[in-house]
Image (tube, rainbow, N blue to C red):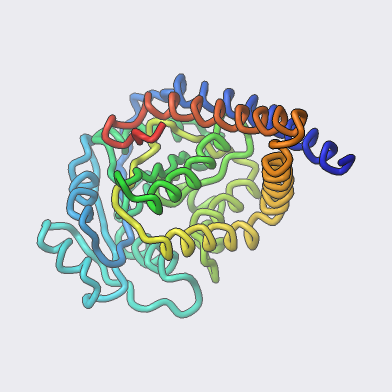
Length: 332
């Protein structure tokens, strides 16, 4: 029992620390609205692979941005990709990058697009085709780049759970826990589905070199920005919803891929997540097992659940200030 109470104490302590950090992050989400009159020439690069039921709505949200001096360029691996025909039907500009040989396909597509379609753009913005972007996404995303100390402005994804589908709900909850890791601090990371860099910064921090042989586009950009000692700014207004259903197999594939990529690119973060997650799970389920006969264990179980629940409620209230009502789960 001594081991149980030691683990329980550690789990409660990390729960309190996590809750405090979550409250601070939620405050950033509610209050941070960067503004700038700066209106540089922007090119948006969007790599695509395949289509789904939400594809046309997502693509249209990118094409319909309310921003002057904007070009949008999509890039696929092959004309055989179903996205090619769908994009052409929408009148979009589409490049064909060919099959990747020395790097991940997404990274290869982005490098190809940057080399052949950058034009006279002052800012490079990057996004994913599985997200729905508000009309002011570009103007919100580029606002922090007016500061010379900032290398990357980034948003993040918010998976919208499909009603009645448990797998979709689990994916949404698992992904949502990362949102409050971002905030007003120096530990932010870039997310490739909603990020932007000034063109001169892209060259200065040598993103092309960072992408050489890379599988993850955003972790490579994160490392390049940190190596140059420049800031990565999280823009809450660029938290973008991703609609659509998924299977349990797709949930497992998604979560495994994220964990493996994190282990490769951010081993310290992976070890910390492994340690805190393991401590919480052992303490929580051990307390649940003992709760029927031990009032102390029942109190510990309640405390752990309450700390996690309060943080989740705080997060949901915060993201409700930036996401459309349709993106918020009713499974409170």
